[in-house]
Amino acid sequence: MVKKIFSSPTIMTWISYFVRFGSTIFVLPLILLKFPEAEIAVWFVFSLVIGLAQLADSGFGPSIVRSTSYYYAGSKHIPKNIKEFKSKKEINSNVNYNGLIDLLNTVNIVYIFLGFISVVVLMFVGEFIVSNSINMTDNVAMLNSAFYLIVIQAYVNLQKVKWVSFIQGVDKVASIQLAQSIINALNIIFNFLSLSLGYGIFALLAINLIFNLVTLFYSKYFVIKWFKQNEKLYSLKYNFNKRIFISIWPSTWRWGLMQYGGYLTNNGSAIVVSQLSSPTLIASFLLSQRAIFFIRQVSQAPLYANLPRIFQLMAKQDYKVLKPYCAKAIRMGLAIQFIVLLIMILIGPKMLDVFEINTKLAPLSVLLVMSVSIMLELHHAFHAQIYMGSNHVPFLLPAVLSGIAIVGISFGIVNHYGLIGIVIVQFLVQLSFNNWYPVYLNLKLLNWPFLEYIKCLFYVKKCN
Image 1 (spheres, rainbow, N blue to C red):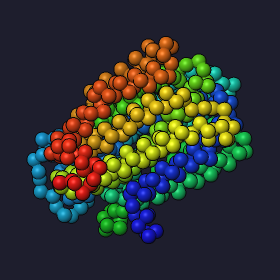
Image 2: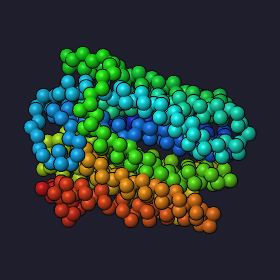
Image 3: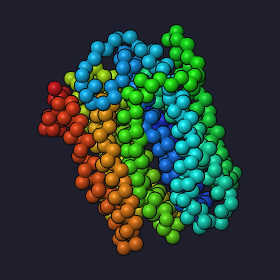
Image 4: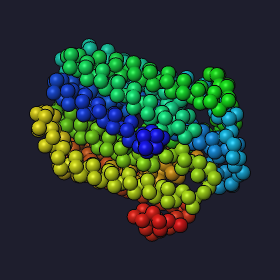
């Protein structure tokens, strides 16, 4: 029983998420109790900037997972577009180790360049986002220094993505999630102790940086050990394979730009709110957003944790097995999200009162709109991820235009309609295209009529 739990990608991903949730259970309440409201706002804005830093990956992380899954399934080549994907090629039963090694050596070079990009983006865009909230505190010098720890952490996190993505691609999701859960648990313990002893944001970020370094070194060691266990030798090299890069580049740059658009779509409202003059309003909205984003993370685990297996089925174009496999994961994810969102809306404000936390959740009307939006976004994100198993990424323009529209319109209306206006803008922009287009494309690719999909979603045995 225990072995089955530790070998399940979904369960281990949930455990990893809930360990991270420990920072919300143990660390965040102390932050809300001990920090002035202005510094609470800074803490949430720093989290927003850390999310921005992850965009420097530019889509290579998901491409590494997909490409690794293809080579692990026995493919000789990576399809660079939907036409190549549909022209079915012979799949060997043996793992393509040479392809895996060439892929790693190629992305080693790529991630040096991406690391430089992450530093540049944070030093300019990141500093712009945090400067307003920092200047409203009494610890401007210390918080400015803490910002530079974020810059270093961003570089470390980026290098970590390369190794973790490879591990996921060779279907070792459960193993890496277990290791990350242990490391994150230790991180939470040290954060809790630091706050209990009266240390501030700088100490928290320093501790986070140390444990991110631990994760980086461990994931690199894991990959080298995996090759050794399979009687293959891998040593860190910087050999650029042009054929592999050309295969992954079309989907990568589209996914990378799509991430920037997605960041603006998901966080554009938070960026607008972070520029307001009220620390109370900033803290309230970002606390609500953080809770809802965490609920989405937990809810996406049933499908996201099994993406390597989904990509392997996509490589073989085994849609008969793929459909019920995906339908079951989508159903579970949406059900979990609905239930947890309902619990948050009903008892979340009361829990904050019980712990005598002054920072409140956003008003009920705002929470309801945010909840409906995140339900629709999770559904279309599931389908987008499955579709991109074909290594085709057609969602670039909608993501970028949606992000720009949300930020631009929100800046224009925030002073007139407040938070409710901002979240309604996000909801309507997403509903106009993004909430349905990935679903349409994926069902079309899998030759899955919509009514059959709905029937399958509610009763997996009805899948054909």
